Amino acid sequence: MSPDEKKKAAAEAALAYVEDDMTVGVGTGSTVNFFIDALAGIRQRIRGAVASSSVTEARLRERRIPVVNLNSVDELPIYVDGADEADPHLRLIKGGGGALTREKIVAAVSRRFVCIIDDSKLVVLLGKFPLPVEVIPMAQSHVGRQLAKLGGRPVLRQGFNTDNGNIVIDVHGLTLTNPVETEECIDHIAGVVCNGLFARRGADLLLVAATAGVKTITR
Ligand code: 5RP
Image (tube, rainbow, N blue to C red):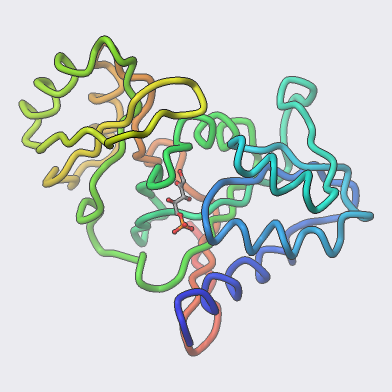
């Protein structure tokens, strides 16, 4: 099975958690793109979708799925998104696509976070994938110095701005044995908007696609 076939399998498995009349939170990335395509097939049954990025919003609109403003709902029943890494405790690294802040907001508003990945992303310990950190541009040097003090090697994502007009620093080589603590610590650096650790609010359900089929991991 190719990586894309696995992503598609995980994405299609997530449809089983979408019920009639739900407003669905939708993440960002190549795995989620397969989910959006699958969601289009049942668009008559759902109320609409909240997008976690402008790219996702455009794809939802292209597929005639109604886009709902997050501020018009109190809570979302479900959020479906991919990840760059996931551990067996359902803690994640996200933000490879740079949509981490909006993704974290949509996840925070959602009752159930269904994370869809292929098996290459399931790891025992998070941190091989560089941790994305969204930063206010004027704070780039300050935040970089603080991240280096935490033992990481900060690298500016070249030529990239988030949907919020900020920069992303990818942090290599962090030891993430306590991801909840690290998530909080990085969030407290002045100038950091958000970091890609989803440990405080991890996934509720992980759908991991492998050649043998899609495995479900719950907390
Ligand atoms: C975007 C994300 C994505 O979920 C993550 O990068 C995984 O993407 P893909 O499904 O393309 O591998 O966090 O900000």
